[in-house]
Picture 1 (tube, rainbow, N blue to C red):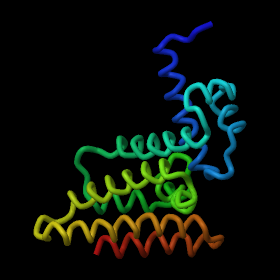
Picture 2 (cartoon, helix red, strand yellow):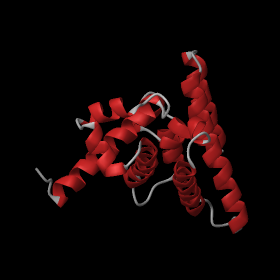
Picture 3 (tube, rainbow, N blue to C red):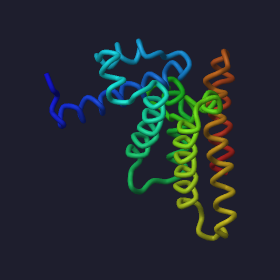
Length: 183
């Protein structure tokens, strides 16, 4: 039985949402096609007919995750509020629904050029967003440099906070980075 174009689009969206969540939760290397198909409630054939390969699915799921997180941002926001939310224990403890950069950064360098290109485009987008929220008294190059350092600090702090096995140290990493960025 053929699936309508509308149903195929819904299936694709469901697969991408599920894959983006699973990849952030478990990591790219730890998630095989079996797990992706099972989590999406699809068959291997459905996945391959939609994407052709796991590599292509990962590429599109990474782009989907980046875009979805970007859509969650309000039109207007204060940087300090963004820092507080990003560097919170709640965000640290929910990688499946959190920032794809902090969840996937350590693995992306070993992925295909397509995955890396989508990730890079997302990083550029975040840097642009942060730069646009920086003080207008800074020269454009200064704003961009500060945005680069801010993005690296945010992602790096969250990666470290998730990696350590000492809850107090994890909380201290988040707190100290929030404080440094808000200064």
